[in-house]
Length: 373
Image 1: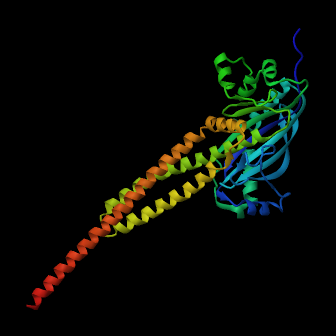
Image 2: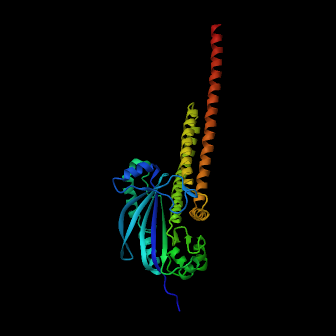
Image 3: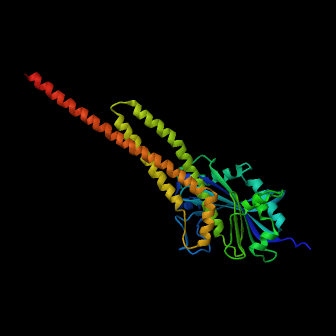
């Protein structure tokens, strides 16, 4: 006899969309600026993990936005909307749809419908409008606001808190097709594809489960903890910011080479000043970028909670955050070497100019001496 279908008694679907909105955000001013529009925000902290085990470098500010009504598979669905602001310039919007008393098949179908409605394949008009609304409200808090909404990341999360029958993680994986949920596919997947999708699987207790992929995650958490979801969001925020700095330095390197070539080709007595000015500009770029990337690196410190550290590290690895961070470091090293070489050239030009001036003075003294006689 086939086993009865599982019903999701309580769960939630979350669509994230993250933007880089500024060089930095003053979170205190952002909260004050937002107050006339809605209730005040709250500073984030992980709900169940002790502060000494996991801590934010600077706790993000969470703001509530107006709820919205979505059409998912022809049905009208109410959704809560919020945004978390990170001091290094990222806004993480979250749209949450509650799921109650739905069969597993209906839960998976709604997950896919949310992806079609607000995922990467759908127009980003909804998210861009939210971004514009937020930026207009907190503009006094934005340091060098960004007008480019093209740099963004999306992510989907499905959470189950209660089922129609108590199941541990292994029994749940045997009863439902978690690989299909994570892929969004309705056709049968190959064994290799299934293994890849389920490769990043984590459990602490027998009855909890976390499954991570590049663009989706599933959490089975009967205790209602939200810490895993929070660290997934932080990893996505770090991804956005490192993508921003990687693209910024990609644009800066060719300009730097062109300016250096122009300064060297001038061959004038002002070359030393040009080299020094260019070096100062590059030094400022390196200092600012290094300061912000260190903030991004230290956005979340996981020390004593080994389980949460494993999930967080796996998310960072999946999102290729360490690779992007290393890429930014390499480009910064090139710029550091360049401005050091420019300072040396500026010093060399100054020394040569000084030597020429001394020689000219000596020649002038000799000429004046000869003219006296």
